[in-house]
Amino acid sequence: MRLAVGCAQWTHKAWAWHALPSAERLRAYAHHCDAVEGNTTFYATPPPATVAGWVAQTDSDFRIVPKFPRTITHEGRFQNVDKEVRAFLDAMEPLGARAHALWVQLPGAFAPADVPALARFLRRLPASFRYAVEVRHPAFFDDAHATSELEAVLTAADTEWIPFDTTALFASPPTSDAERDAWTKKPRVAKRDEALTDRPIVRYLGRDDPARTVEGWQPWVKQTATWLREGRAPTVFIHTPDNAQSPELARLFHAAVRAEVPALDPLPEPEPEPEPMRLF
Image 1 (cartoon, rainbow, N blue to C red):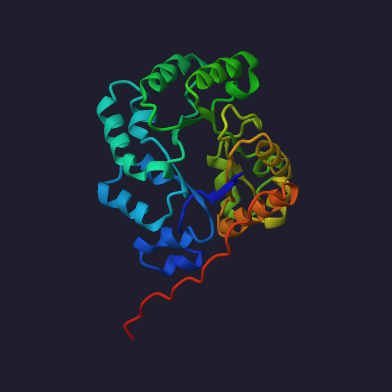
Image 2 (image 1 turned 135 degrees about the vertical axis):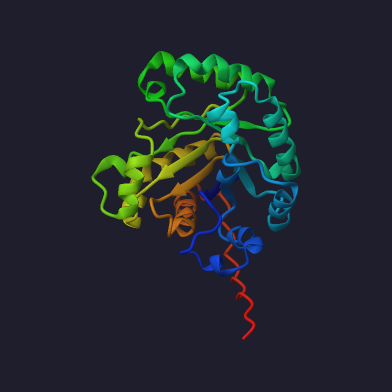
């Protein structure tokens, strides 16, 4: 039985280990959380040395969910991207089991009419990786036919649907600069809490007030506990608009689920972070 929790990134100026050399920050983060979103790969496929560093800094059971580059999903829209896909898959191969799923995040303009292109893309991907898809067009959440069609394509490819739950953010007007910025950038779609595979992945966005973040995730605590009892192995990523307290909140979420499912092993206690080297 395993629940992995993590954040959108492994370093942040508000986190203590941000003062460490960049090559040590993932290792420090992995003392607190056992999963992380791989958002950096959206902007470019990393070189081999970078991926080797991720491997060196994490245990084999650490979960990374790397995002397909935007040249494939947003710019190419799955057309004439074979070279880019091969380069990305080759780059991710050294991660081994750490690559929990490769993440196909699609733009809001990706509509139900585009699902056949996604189906063709998924059919061509190698079975050596697992995959997960995030969509943002409102029709996939509001139109039962569009929902059913996408679910059928993903199920046929043994691919998970990643929900990005922003309902807590949009429940009331923003109260900070970070929340106001998030209001302009984050998708406003209906909440989805159904899993298609044995490895659900959830992205939850709370508020900068930790109490409101905790209040908003209560249904996810219950749902995650249900998945664990069903034998699934979920991964939950905790976001807030400023992400300043996300690692602590991720651990708190794990503890809340464990209160529902006592058989779930606790996360290890974080190791003390080494002091950065100073010359004087």
